Length: 185
Image (cartoon, rainbow, N blue to C red; front, top):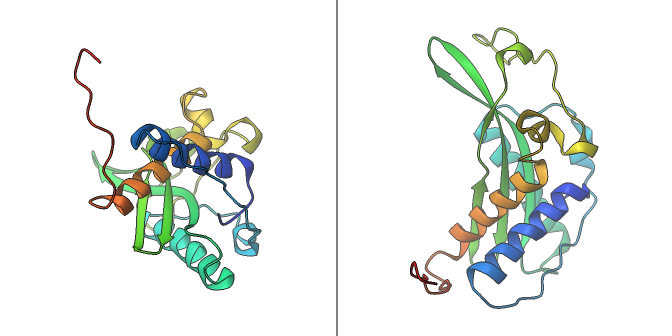
């Protein structure tokens, strides 16, 4: 796993456990090994746009794979940022997390849900990068997502969901999930 932020590492672990233990209904040992990454600490700016977030996560995961030369079955990296959607006559900014997963049979990307930044936190966004005026939340308290959702969603839970989605795409058609249980259980 690229990076060493505890909430991101735990989110990846949660996503792996949810996919393998709950989704496949079989216990699989899971270890998430953090890899210190200078690039992650170099830029304090949030990436803007899904493509930039995905490319950043992909580049980090690919860098790990190239550097560690097959030491692990999977290489993952998470990247959070902002994406812009124009509707209602103005641009709206949303916060989202992406996870890139590289493995022996290819690669996949998964994203979390999106939470809109309230207009009072963002300046005019019509041209160029948005001037984000202020961002609520701290890393220790679950980050920006936790602040926006009153703690119902955190960076950890967003990374967990993005990891689950990446694994689901990665293994689609390769692994069979547990049988769907009917209404009676």
